[in-house]
Length: 447
Ligand code: ATP
Ligand code: MG
Image (cartoon, rainbow, N blue to C red; front, side, top):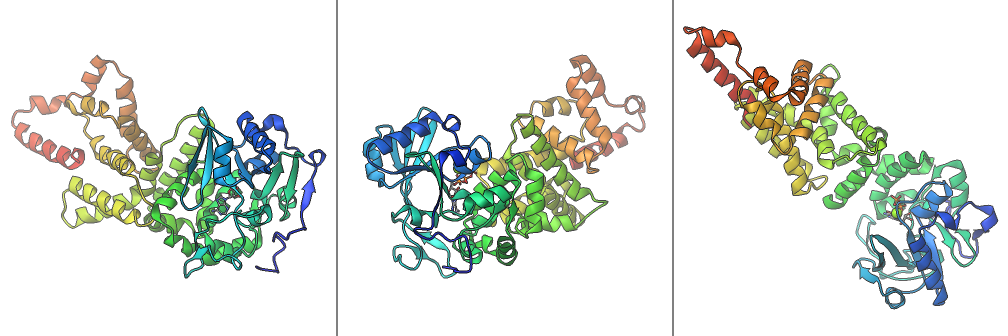
C-alpha cells in the first residue's frame, strides 16, 4: 500500500483514547446496541461500535444507526442471538432484531489486497468480492475515511484509532485511508460518500482526496445504476440538497449522475432553468428542517423538467402536437436517465404524472378544474406549478388562481370556472370562439 500516505493502519501503531480522553458516553448509545456489545463480550468475543455511529457520537450528534463489529464469525453471532438473521451474499452480516430497531453485526473483514487471493478486483481495480474474515487491523482497510474508522471498545469504553481518525475529527477533515486514487478505483461510490459526509458534517476534503475526485469522477459511470440511484437519494434527501448539488457540480460528479440535467443547466433563459432546480432543492431542505416529508419523485421531476421541456419544445417546433411532444419527451428523457441512475417504476410514473399535470393547469373553464383537483397527484402537481411560477416558467397569475380556487367555496369555484360572458351572448362569434377555445384547450390541457 501507499507508504507515502500517513493514514495507513500499521499493526502495533495504534492509538487508544481512554474513556477520559473522548466524549462517547454510553448514555447516548442505543440500549439495544449496548445489549449486543455486552452479550458478545460475555461470550468471550471482542465487540466494538464502528463507523458512522462513533463519528456522530464524537460530534455530539445522534447516530442514524449503530453498527457493531466483532471477531465472532456470522455463524457464531447467530448462535449468540435468537433474534438474529444472516443477510448478504457478498459479505455476510448478522442483523439482530429488536422490534423495529436492527443492530447490524459484521465480522472483521480480511486482509489487504496483496495477501488476499479471495478478493476479486476487476481490470479497473474495482473490488468485486471480498468475503473473508480477519482481524481489527485488517478491518480498518475496509473503511473509507479515517473518521469512519474509529472503534469504540465495549471492554474498556476506549476509542481505538489506527489511522489518525481522532486528529482528523478535530480538524474536520475527510481523509481516505491509504492511497486516494486506489481507494476510489476500488469503489468509486466513495467519491459520493465524500461529498455526502463533507456536507453533512461540515468537514472539508483533504487535498489529496479532492485531487483524486477531480481525476476520477468519470469512474462513477461504471457503477450499477441501481446503486447510484440509492446513493443519489441519500445525497438529495439529506436535508442539505442544495449544498450537495453545488459540491457535486464542483467536483464534476453531478454530470455523471444526471447528465441531461447538467446539459440543461447550460441552456439558460434569463437564468430560469437553474432557478427552478435550485428552488426545488431549497424547498426540499426547508421542508426537512420543518420536519415535513419530502418525496424523491418530486425532486427528480424538478431535475429532469428542463430537459423534458426543452426536448418537447423542439418536438413541437417539428410539428408534433404539444401533449404528445411532452409524453414523448418524458419517455426519452427517462430512458436516458436510467442509464445513469435507475428510477424505480413507481418513481418514474409519479414524475410523469407531475409533468403531465402542468399543461392541464391552463384549463380554467368548465368542469376540468374540479376534476383536476381530485387527481391523486394534484397536490404535487400544484406545488410544481408554484415552483415554475416562482422561477419564471409559468404565469404567477395562473398559480395564484389555483391557490384561490382550492380555498374557495363550491359556489365561488363555480363562478371562477364559468366561461366569460361575452362568448355566451355573441351569437355570430359563437362558433368561431368555440373552435378557437377547443383548439386552445386541446393544446394545453390534454396530456
Ligand atoms: P451514515 O451516517 O450515512 O450511516 P456511515 O458512515 O455509518 O454514515 P454506512 O453506509 O452506514 O455509513 O457505513 C458504515 C461504515 O462502513 C462507514 O462508516 C465506513 O466505515 C464503512 N463503509 C461503508 N460504505 C463503505 C464504502 N463504500 N467503502 C468503504 N467503507 C465503507
Ligand atoms: Mg451508518
